[in-house]
Length: 458
Image (tube, rainbow, N blue to C red):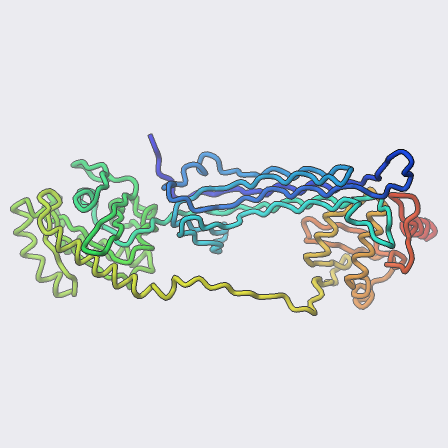
């Protein structure tokens, strides 16, 4: 049996980038073949895309952990590693993606619309890409970057123009079945509808969608019954239709009280006060219902409601109701038309932005910035030449000068990265970018040897 799931938590992880390759071309009679290590491949992304054929988030309820594959490492002979395939999460139209803290990341409505949930890591450069006139044969390559990992909440909110709301067994499912080709479950007991049903209705030249929201009861906005689970499906609707049972046999209930209860729940949920309302007094095929409708209709009209007496069984009054809904939907679409224009906002970074900050802390100095943190992740600290290359990059960026300006002294602790994942080292001013080459044999750097000897002398 197919289940309906409209809210899930997804744990998404992008794939790691492949490591670059450190290789030297070797061929007979060519002793100086030069570096030929290829770059690592990019890790796969985790992407959400709107698929009109998907109507539930059930797939992610059963499989909430989604991790993309890693990129392949580079090889000698200038062969780059293969890029990993992306993981595509197909979600229904109307899916809202938020963080666990409630920050909205994306609102996916249009078919084919995408959002990057977790980005895959970039592949590391091979030593062929790192070669320069100053460093002709690098004995190292850059490591691939790890992919992003984060938890997101996928929440499905039905994209419909009209929402049918009311007490259980008010006849909402029967009404949507009479108005459209939808065939929801219909029975003579409460809470027959356990999931929202959608139906397409045509009225003149207007085609719109009607949502049958599961029955609400007092306290629905606080979690009683099924209301809290499905009130979110009313949010996107531009018109609300109260389906009122005029033939209820329950003691102590009358149409006016039923409508007041539902309105109180909509008000408690919030954000729906501006939606136009219609009232459909249902079950006019029953004589007692028609008598009740004559009694309550004047009171409803005094409150400003446009009232329709209908019967989902005999189809009485359905045509005027469908055209009234179409008129309100058309007006709502006209008001929203200017908002549908796609606009792209380009916000370039300032040209003089240094890209990092140095913060003085109790136990040393912390360097934060996108480029320094990325360079640290790419560095193989088991290779002295790679460490020297990192020092050159940090010095050219201005990190060394900023540490001196902040009062850093030889031997003080310097952390690069956030508190929970930082690289800590003892800073020494001898590791600076020099005018001449500093590496000795491949994989070594004379500055690292000097730093180690100085540390022993101290």
